[in-house]
Amino acid sequence: MSENTLTLTAENFDEVLAESETPIVVDFWADWCGPCKMIAPILDEIADEQAGKVRIAKLNVDDASEIAMRFGVMSIPTLIKFSGGEVDKRVQGAKAKAQLMEELAI
Image (cartoon, rainbow, N blue to C red; front, side, top):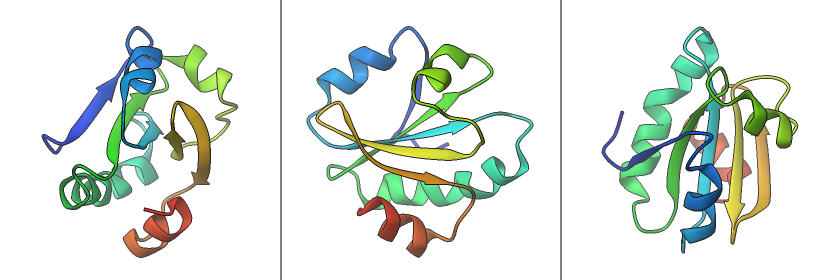
């Protein structure tokens, strides 16, 4: 995982989103999810290349199922972009880097 990628938990989720001055893309994922593993290196690249413009964060749905339920995450990977603490964009499934960046407007 990139040093520019945040790890979110149920305990710090709301605080991190509220305090962020830049948009945050949260990757809702799980250890057992093959497509989640496929996009992990892509998200690390985006985190490094877009540092200062957008932050990438990961939330393990097995450890924070209440957060996943709160945002209606029914399948993973789901990426939700938050701007100003509010949901801005949502993307489901593993996609190529260019498509992810386009759909998330990064």
